[in-house]
Length: 492
RNA sequence: GCCCCCAUCGUCUAGUGGCCUAGGACAUCGCCCUCUCACGGCGAAGACAGGGGUUCAAAUCCCCUUGGGGGUACCA
Image: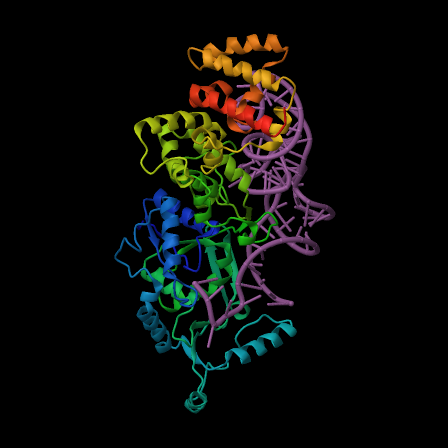
């Protein structure tokens, strides 16, 4: 059997959408599973909407997800160029061939005329299709149109009878009636650019693509493409149409559902492994017990047979949970690496981190690891470990630090910390327990005020860890500062 | 309008005629752990869209209805 060759062919009209990313992933997994080739092709024939910047964004997004391509931009390959905008002569060549063999013709109908006829067809309850009136134009008629200044398009002469079967690896055989479902569609626009349904065939055929794995939304166009393959004598590839990704309201996932671009997820602090794992589960499943898959496992286990047919709702909560799982699996060093840019950007860490500061950060991260869902969360959770100007959550202050004895309790802890030989649980807990008896309170009544005083919030790692990390000097200063603040605001 | 696809807990799914009083995961709720929040552990609630067939037997096969999605462009 020949080498598997698949491709991902995004059009650079914006960010890489999660749907596109999932398509890229399935192609990539399929290629890697079969030891095949993953081709990246940029479909930039829509000059009005395509930009170079968008191309770069897509390339960056794929790199972030670690879906490396074997052929394509920056990689080269024997079947280039990999930008459609650089392949115009090829499309022209094959369109000419269709013209020569009588499987294509020039059409002079204007968009207005076409639209009007379409409306009439809808009104008559028929399926909308080009009526073929330019199929057999005489030279005189043609010249008359040219004289009018009409610029022709090229239409494909589709089959006039029978049916076109799409053998789909996910959906099985899907049959389309040639007469009503495949009309003489445009393959070359009047502006000299090929249309998608034509260019995609020429490209996939010339690039020797063996399996076309793409979104469900392309299924209806497939019979048109198959007819082009056949008219041109190309081998028809295998198709696999994967289900769409929907928003919570079951409509197609789009920007209005919130973050949908891979770039956004990257910026919010999602790990590539978590994104990939989650995306893989959108429309694919392995068995009844596993949800966490490493990349090698995904490659080993992925198959089109197990791709589901129904659309999947994108569940951000599950993605978040999964990201947390991957964060917890990281080594401390690995966690440090992913957190570093976020901390630097937020001003928690300098550009150059000294060995001592890194060591301290590693200890902080050890405490925060189980508390992170997104890498970006580290900024808020770690702030008070780095800055003395952390903010007090006044609602919490009101609730916790206005109780009777607050001043005495904080004063007691202040003294205990001052005298302790070492700020750890072993040395402090006995002292705190003494305090409990003295004030007639429970551990929580002592620890919570301390926590709020030191962090400004009622949420933090275990108090002894916080005390140890902060160190005597900062702890004493923060307790003093908190007491001053309370008095200033006349809360105690 | 016409055509195509799809249909199991709120969500992602397992299930390919008997193993299903339908399994797992996220989310939800309760309990445990506990100095808070996480993590972790235990448990609860929660689905075969509806109707007809086929069969000894149907979540699984067929048909219809309903619902959702997509296509129908000189967008990709």
